Length: 393
Image (cartoon, rainbow, N blue to C red; front, side, top):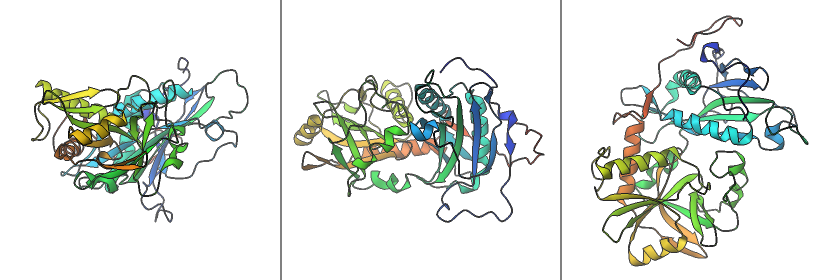
């Protein structure tokens, strides 16, 4: 994106509209949050007034960039409730940084101050605190979305949007159904060779709407997700929208946690992925203990390509000890079976997968205190006259 112009995004400009008396969710929307945050943007005037009000539908020009060319990106975050009743976010500035990166790739605005946007997000989540479940696996899912609302049709002078909208909505318990897979047999994946999710030089490492909608038709009945492959060697990349890992016993006896490198730009730089890498690497080096007991000291994190042949060979010689996916939606999910080239391969379960899931959950819910956990400040909303502004204090 070009150098920022116009007004900055300011949390102090927030206008809050409470829910109307007797508010009830629309039929079929009972699992969604009641409020939404919206912030308009214009290429000349900059960021408009942030507003928090009742969740509602949006409307656009029929030729808006989001409708014509899928000019939209998003993030996936979660709010968690601690046993003490306060609400936490997990490494939220990481999500906001990644949203900036995706926005820049689309020519959308990406010049906001994360502290300002996080302040607004905190107020939205504080209003929805009663909806946040207080048990492991429970969450309030948060979907920040940025899209082009200006007309984007035909040949333009440049690739940048003239108008855009940033909004955030929430939903209760996304991904909860897969949470217990680490305790059970794991999920089933179909290794997909008919559709390609991403390729070097493409947009696979950005969280763009088009990366997901265009390949959802690949999902087969009876399988939780598609396992995306690439290259003649059928390297694995992601499982659905989750980063993939295998656990192997190395020749020197170390337990290796192997995941695809980010170097070729095919997989999303997941925040759960990054967190697992740091926790395991710090544990192995002695820089910090793993959050929960039970992780072997002799572990090694490896980032490289993983061909399907290696998985099959590892099953045959016993060196493959487990396989899992990770991401905001699923946390850590055990993979129990892969269908590939007409054959089904059972993947052995590993207690280390459950340990990883429980450690991530403990950090997210504040059962183990960590700098990655951000406490949402209490806020009940301030009602003011339409012409006034709400203090961020």
